[in-house]
Length: 111
Image (cartoon, rainbow, N blue to C red):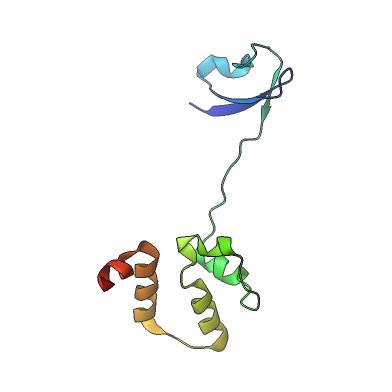
């Protein structure tokens, strides 16, 4: 059962609709104003980025903005990137510590 989003030509609002079988061909009416002039629009989506690509894209010469630090996946990312740039292998213990910090287990272990 796909979920499609439709924009109403009359009121401009966007609504999601679950499409079942043969109903896929028919455009649904707007649930807000009842108009039948709707068009299917591209739904918003998220892009998942691997740690490898995040490391490659991280510019360590510039300070990241505050939103960078609100994502727990970025904990230790700067240190990993700088270590690789300098040719330093911090070992598996460092990677384990970073993973503990990302999940919050490091803080729990310190308590």
